[in-house]
Structure formats: C-alpha cells, structure tokens
Image 1 (tube, rainbow, N blue to C red):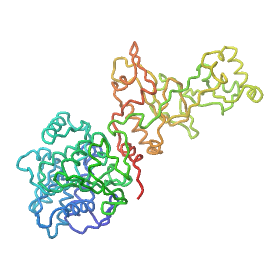
Image 2: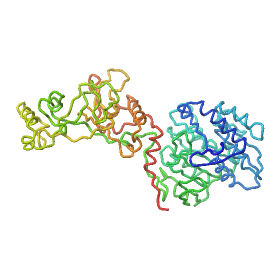
Image 3: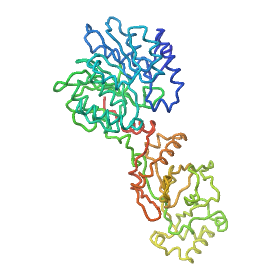
Length: 535
C-alpha cells in the first residue's frame, strides 16, 4: 500500500518497495474491471495492514520452532504473501504457495513472487484441494476468499461440491451458500494437523440459514480460536458493502468445554467489545445469537421477502370513482378548495411510465391530472363555509351516490379512507396474455399522489427508508429488482382467472421473494438488527 493510504480505518505507511509495487499493480487490474464484473467474481482486495494483523495473530498460534508451510487461496496479487514476507522475521518458511484462478491477477503474482521462495499456481483452488499431493500439506492458511453469491455458481458445480463435502465431511451445504463456504470446507483437507487457518469472511454466515454447515464445522470438526465481527459501519473493503468477520481456528477436534474469543467493533487488534464464549453453547443452534452481542434472528438475505422491507395496503376504495375523482374543470366550476384535493394516479392502462416524477410541491407530472375529492369536514361546516363544494355534494345525493354500499357505510358518505402517498406501488391485477411479461407492475412514486384500489401501496419500513434516504439511484435499483421478480413467483403468490387475468392481494404480495438483493440492502437489513450489549 502506498504511503498514507487509508482503507476501512487502517492507516499505514509502507516504504517496502515490494508492497508498494503490489498495491499499485493490484489497483491497475481492479480499475480495468467493471464493478459488476468484480462483484460477480467476488474480487475484493484486503487492506495490507489488516492482512498483516491477521497473519501476525495466526502465525503466533504456531510454535515458534515449527517451520511454516503457508497457503493463500484466492491469491489475487498476494496481499497475505506480502504480509508474510513483511512479518516473518525469525521464522523459517518452508514453503509458501498461492492459488489464483484469474490469470489477470495470477500473472502479476507470478511476476512479483516467483523470484523468491514463494510459488504461484494459476488454477482453481477447489481442484487444488482435491489433489492428494496437497493433503495435510500446509500448517498456516490466511486468505480473503472470493465472495461469489450462489446464483453466480453453475448448478452442476454446486451439486458436485455439495456431494464431495457430504461424502468427505458429513456436512450438508445449502444450495444458497456462497463460494466462500465451499472454500473453507474443502480447504480442511490440505491443512495439517494442528495447523492454523484464518479467513476474512462475510459475517452473514453467523446468522443466516445457509451458514449452518460452516457453523457446524467450526463447532465440531476444528477448534475455534476467535471470531472478530467488524461493525457494519466499518466495511473492510473500500469497494464492497460487506459486513465482515475474521475467523481463526486450529485443525484439531475441539475438547469438551472449549472456549473461544468473540470480539466486536473497533479494529482487529483493538476491538470495542470482547467476550469469552463456550463452544458448547453454540453447537446445534440454527443461528448464532451470541450472548451479550445479540445478533438476532435476521431475514435470510438470499430469501428476502417483501414483508421484510415493506408494508402493503390496497389503494383507496371510494365507492364511486367517477364522482370522487375529478378533473380541473370540476374543481373550478364548484370552487373546491385545494386542501380537500389529493392528486391521484390514473388507471394502470393509462399509466405507461415506471417512475412518477413531480414538481417541487409534490404534484405528479402527468397529463390530464385528476384529483381525489377528500373532504373531512362534516356536512354543516361544508354547507356554511364552502357553498360550491356543498353544491357538488348535493348533486351527488341527487344521483344517489350517498346510498351506494361503500358510501352508505361511512360515518359521512363523502369521507375517504386515509392513505398516505407511498414511494412504491404495484398494480393489483393484470393480464399475462401468454407472454413472459409480469402482469403485476411496480412503480416508483416520487410525488404526493395516492391511488385507488387498482393499485397496492408499498410503504418502506423504517429501516428501508433510512437505507434509501434521498438516494435516487437506490430507489431506481430497487424498482428494477421489483420489476424483475419472475412471472412464476408472482403467479404462484396470487391467483389466476379466466382470460389470463391475474390478481395479487396485499398479504400475498408480502410473501413474494426478491430475485436479487443489492449489497446496500443486504448489509443494511442485517445492520439494523445488530445490537451491541453492555460492555
């Protein structure tokens, strides 16, 4: 890392030419790749100071007279290689091997490291661990494995890995597990007895269902030494919103009543909170709700449902739309006061845009704008103070509007249901017409317009509102994800009628699963639920 560089709170000044060159080349490759490509491949580099801290702690768990056989999976440009060379004074390094699947990084690593005692293999670490030559070969492993989410993994590859782990380790890995889970588990075969492994992992595995296999491994098949959970405010990569933890363990079956250190916040060397916990208390738990830190039951981030981030209510049922939804001409003819008027969206068949823009007053920028007549004053007040409006109500009574079912069952026949404008809306029903386009559309409402019951109002939870803030790009990203919900998912949630008509009720929509969860939402929903106990 170059002098003065800061990453995730780790300030460092490195004058060693090797690390400066490595960091420079790493940054060059990173910038040559798009963020989407690096996200898909899970390529997020570790700050050099943090790598040095992890390496020093891990190396300290080995007897000082034992030569080091080091392995860095997911090598990248070799930040842990660099940390090992930087902090190996007085230790014998028998060998150091790095494995990197991406030639763009691997060739740089070869150029940087092959001239020393370090060896770089360009290839698949998952295959490397299956080679009998590498069985129990290494006594020190440090790495930041690729954070590739499950839907970027080939189905056949997942099935093969799940079968391999089940046969070799007796662990059942969920199909929702990210690549890092497989990395940790298959690495078991190459770690020597009493060897030390350190992993910089997404902290989600502590409390999501698909982390169960990894939690079971840490409690039953190795001796867990420590977990440091970084505060979600302090992401460890300046290019990824990932709440991280450092897991260190010894390749040895745990003794009864083994304890481990759990720390939270601050940095790795100086955490804000520390507890010594008994591993027996964690065995068999569906989720690790660790004492005094209370990581509670959070939504499964790869099965996030709309109910986790929205409340859903149907739009307003007026009982007589043709009477209560009025245009500018009627407003002027009867001198209807503005406080009794709410802008309202037209029928979905007339609304072609996905985003409703507004003027500074919140009025939607729509052609032929209509308003909902929403007067909350009793009849005697309207009759005395608003003669024009009272004339309009008299006209309605002449037409029998006040005797219609919904109107007749209100306290006052012209009172309306109360609905606040919602940031997102969904159409209540639609026709599929045999195509793959979803009959249910989602709309981003940037205005103060309300809607009738042909729409559903989606009100963000308090947590989602905080995450969205005034960030239009996040709102648009969430809108895109909502409209990418597979047709089959919506059809399964709702109900079908003749002629290709489909309808979804509020409670049914709440059970729909998001097809993708952006990182700001993934980490934000977890962060909202992480509560720090007393010091």
